[in-house]
Image (cartoon, rainbow, N blue to C red):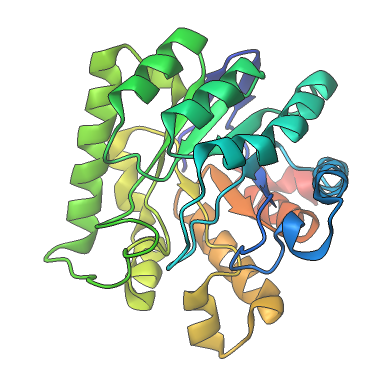
Length: 291
């Protein structure tokens, strides 16, 4: 059975006795998933707000807001522009107060602006190459942090040299060291989430192996977040374009939950909420309560 965790993220206590669905909001023009809110409309702030409210209505437990694409080959966005993109939505969602707000950034100055606005979680793609000033902020603001393994390089270069002697062992060791750094700097254990980094410096086969062996990550005694939604390894297996990967995503989400994921980060909240609820029902020791 998957262990139950509690994450304390400022004013939100997130009980992970059931799988939580994190809804993605990309306020970018160049998201790999073609859903970037700046891609289709000059009124991207309104579009982002509509998407956030739809995610909440469809059952999102957490919202993850990003102002810079982290797809392979993505161009870097200056901190000022990133803040300009994400801050209005963060402020609006914090006023609603209905779900915790996570911000997908690796820049300390962006994290500070988001935390000042009330964000609850910093989702840091460079979680295994930690920025000390960012970690101190997590302590000061009593926030939570997602530590993600990205492999080598940056989003622009991470897929150029992908090789591991021991894929799972190396990722676990890297995440373990990151957790220890967080604890040493004063971040409490109940504020740390780990993410093996599906698609970040990994081959398609690596991504499949991570999901298959995900139970091994439970040795770190931290809740596991998985972000497999619509990613290219699904397209490679199924020979499907991005907009045709819903069922492949559902399979990846279901197996990730079965193998220990506590949080799934997805684009299609309504469908994946059903997947998560069904997996939880099957895995529940009192499964007869659902019949």
